[in-house]
Length: 322
Ligand code: NAD
Image (cartoon, rainbow, N blue to C red; front, side, top):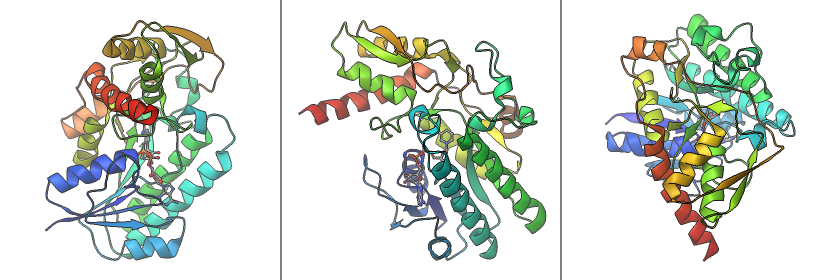
């Protein structure tokens, strides 16, 4: 039986990845600081451990797994990573995890680790025009991410690539672009825009006004979690070793995203624009490289994922209200 290790298995993408690997017949060990709050884990072995501790990391990487996925990070939505209040924790915690994982995997003679980087590592100067953001993989340098979260991602990309160069590893690096879906954080300050909008609209009466940070004209693309997991496993199993975008190319403004959620909900929602942490003005995935190297790219329309996500968040809101 094939074996897989998922670090960050108590998180949103990690939880979905464990389910996918179980469907494929893997024996799976999941590791996280916490169990997933939204769904019971399907991992065969779930270890609650702090990956900032090298001994813990060596303890969970105690054999040569067939597949290793490193998703653990101190992260959140704009309300967490763009306020500046968590910068030290974000950098220190995530970098420490990655340093420990790269070292332990190498010493255990594990050749290939999947590392989840982020589109937040792209330079801010290429993302000022909301209609024409540049996020091709080779536009990463000169580096100028707009957040410490993005700088840490860039550092850790380079760390895993250095292990490839110097130690003959074959680590794989994805740059995720705004992943969303059910069983993710939807309240409490670490949630992302799609989940926050689904929650606000689920809580609203049919003609209410909801608050949106900024003028809502900033653009983004959003990738449904199932396609993220598909891209993740495909990349790990591919022979392509440079960083590659895993995201959707369907770019929308935040106002359009809110409108699409309201349509799914069947409500006529007005938007009240208030000041808030925003991130870059425009961002979209560029999928030319992934198509070329993997012969695959995400293709599902945004609204399909929003329907499933809204339904799940509406259920959480109703359960909380009961
Ligand atoms: P998440 O926050 O739901 O999952 C990350 C998990 O890491 C959490 O469960 C957390 O408890 C765990 N973790 C944090 N510190 C830890 C520690 N010291 N020891 C053990 N576990 C620890 O986030 P996610 O959305 O599932 O993201 C997974 C990965 O993908 C992260 O690396 C994230 O930076 C990256 N990413 C996500 C997105 C997105 O839109 N969701 C976009 C770009 C990149």
